[in-house]
Image (cartoon, rainbow, N blue to C red; front, side, top):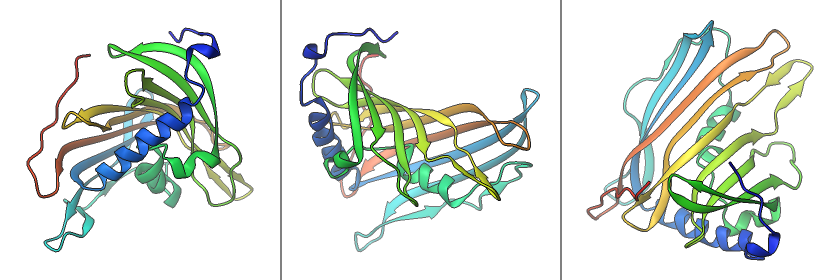
Length: 230
């Protein structure tokens, strides 16, 4: 349960402190390799009716260039859902969202209180787009921010905008992204999970989203994943 607290109990510059910490995370993550497994299921009467799955590895070439590779061909036997360019942009940029200093102008923030998340005392910060321009994909939701160092340890929200046009409906699920502490310094995504019913005009479709990030290792050095007490 999120407990409301007086605004004065939170730092007045909380959003900027979070963005500065997130910028450190982004710069560090650019030097890490990892595996990303995506499973999207279409649920009918409580059981999977179709599924999309893929596994990518973020790696570095011998020359040090960061790139991605598929470990195998994606499997797509979804029946009613059709994945779009926006879905894949969200998987890459919004579901593992990092709220960096160069994005501060895009968002308005509001303190929502405090809550313990997995044993960590957190501020809860609402983050919403000021406006959404055509072609943008942005985050709309909540951050759980570690009070000790302003690290984001969990996010919950939805990618926006939902796209509703006469000949196109492109709806997106709510999700929660959990993070783990890597090498004792950085909070990187561990898992994104969503289970939402999308209200298409042709009828609602229940969708499950599961993205898992694993095997983080810094390029050119030995790395380990360290789990903080929960």
